[in-house]
Structure formats: structure tokens, C-alpha cells
Length: 286
Image (cartoon, rainbow, N blue to C red; front, side, top):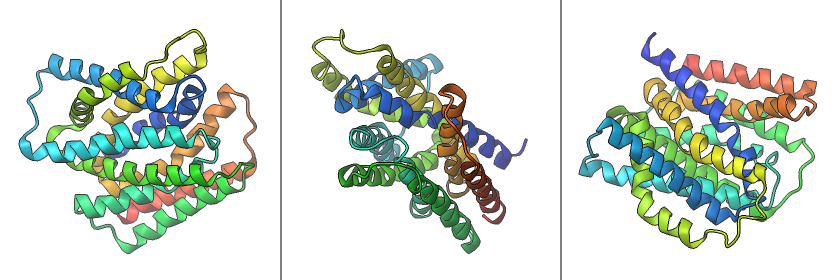
């Protein structure tokens, strides 16, 4: 299998895992404070990442890698989880799809700025069209509007796009799982004390779904998903593989149909088909 194909497969697996992140966060903030949820998920994932690094006897990053790792940590370990957790107190997970539709475009832009990539003009047409399809479809749904939630989600998309691009650039030399593990470990001295300080006084009122949500975002969203995602971006290109994120909202709808028996209508299927064409087109012309 060539490097590009491997990148797309790894990227696809990463997006599939990330698809459950916002619904899981939405469930988790029903039982946990959003700030505690952010530091707790980072602490749990960091301890797992540290154990993995020690078990594999990985070498420490060089001094030149510390700055970029801090950017990754601020973007995907702290920034995106915290901002989305706060935003989801003001909006439904469905409305957040409007902003997730902008994430591939943000990732591509930061891929150019930080990763030195130069996609062809036709790529930007496919990327913008795909983002417009996702955002347009989400706006047609029955969703409440919150300016505070919208601003928080927009900020989350910007820091996440930067964290994705910076992490993918580092993955070319450090490796995909090593990047997210080291970024988590760097955040541990701050996250662990905050988790202990913000810990709920009583666990009695926290129901099972909130615990499941915390487990998912800690293990899958914060660690396992990034193992595939950063490897995919590094192998296949930040801008091009990043377009797979356009499919993330529709994976979420599919999970809702299968697990929650929600109705999936023809408009969603048609838009999904259009998004798939945009992803394929972006790959062909990049």
C-alpha cells in the first residue's frame, strides 16, 4: 500500500472515532462541569499516553519540538475540548455541525501556513463547496441559536485547525501517536492538579451516560483517534486528508439512526453524496 492511500485510510479511521466526540461531550456535560470534564479527560489520556511512551521506551522530543508540542496541547488537548464543552451548554450537538463543517477548511489553511503545503486552486473550490454543503444542511435543521455558543464553537474550530496542522507537521519526524502522547504529557502538570481541585464533591448524582461520555472522550477522542488522525495527515497531506472531516457530521447522524433509531431522510443522503464527491475531488486535484 502506498503512503497516500495509507494516509487516507488512517485519516478515515480517525474521523470515524472523532464522530462520537461532540455527542459524547454533550452527554458528559449533563453530569460534569465542562472545565472539570476538560481537565479530567486530558489527565486520563495523559496518564495512558505516558504509560505508552514508557513502555515503548520512546526518546524525548528535542528542544525545537517543545514549542510546536505546546501549540498542539493548547489546540487539541485544552482549547478545543474546553471551548466545545462550554459551547454545548448553550447549543445542541446538532448545531455544532455548522462549525464542524468549517474545520476541514481551517485545517487546510493552517496546513498551508504551518505545513508549507500548496494545494491547487481547484482544491479550494472543492473544500469550500463541501464546507458550504455541511453548514447549509445543518442550518436547515431545527436548532436553537445562541450567540455565545456560536462564538465559542468558532474559536474551537480555529484552535483545533491549528492543533491539527501543527501536530501533523510534527508527526513527520516524531510519529503520530508520539505527538499526541507528548502533548498530553506536557499538559499533565497543569491538568492533573486542576482535575483534583475541580473534582465534584459527590459522585452520587452523576449518571451512567455521563460516565460513558467521559470514558469515550478520554480514551477515544483524546488519544486513540489522534493516533490514526495525525498519521493520516502526515502521510497523505494536511490539506487533502483534512477534507475527510466533512464526513464527520454524517457519521454522527448514521450512529444516531443505528443506535437511537432516529430518522435519516433523503436530504441528508443527497448532501452526504455531494460531500463525498467534494472529498474525492479534493483528493484528485490536490
